[in-house]
Each structure stands twice: as structure tokens, then as C-alpha cells.
Image (cartoon, rainbow, N blue to C red; front, top):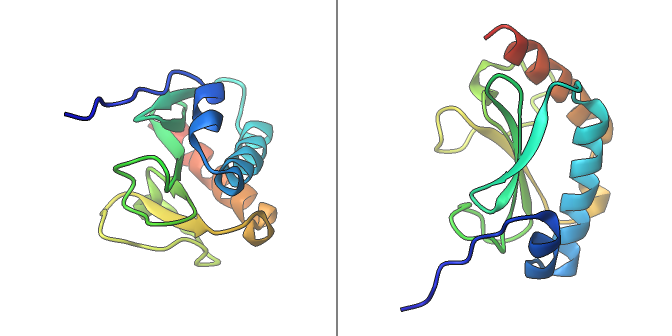
Length: 129
């Protein structure tokens, strides 16, 4: 039986990921960390970076980590995506009723402005809980 791995920190995550996925994760993390209020925290949950305030706000799920439901790239998922206005319709609505997401195949695809706008909306929503 194959042992399950448990990623405890970012260094272990980096060691587990292909280089391109790690670069995408790193850029997304920096955008998120620069734009979340100080009361919000980051932790490794389900072997991936997870950011929360009162509730979950956003998650970064690389394809190399099992159970994310994607075959390639890195998923940026908003936990309360179904409650966000997402005026620019930046996020996809998959089979999960709550989490809306965007999948990136390269760093070049990352639209920092769109992400910051969604983070602001997600933080305001989180503060309302």
C-alpha cells in the first residue's frame, strides 16, 4: 500500500511540485499575502496553501497534489465564490457549488488586478460572517 504524504510546510510543498507549478504557486501566494488584511492567516491544509479570516477565503491547489480535481496547472479557488459578484466573470463555476476558481498553466496568465479585485470582495464577504 502506498503511504500517504503529508506536507507540513512550504519547503516540502516546493520540493513536491514541478518547477512551473511552484512558480505559479509562489506568484499567487505573493499576490494574496500582499492583499489580505493582517488578521487573515495562511496554513497548509489538504497539502496546499489555504488562506482564511473568519472562514476560508482562498486556496491554491497545484495539479501535482492529489484530490484537487485538475490534471495540469494550478487552481486558485475562492471558498465563497458562489457569493462573490465577480463582475468581470473571471472565475469558472465547476461542479463544486461553493468554490469558484481559475486555473493557470503559466505565470504569464496571472492577472494580478483581477485577483486583487476578487480578494477585496472575498475579504469584505469574510468580514460579514
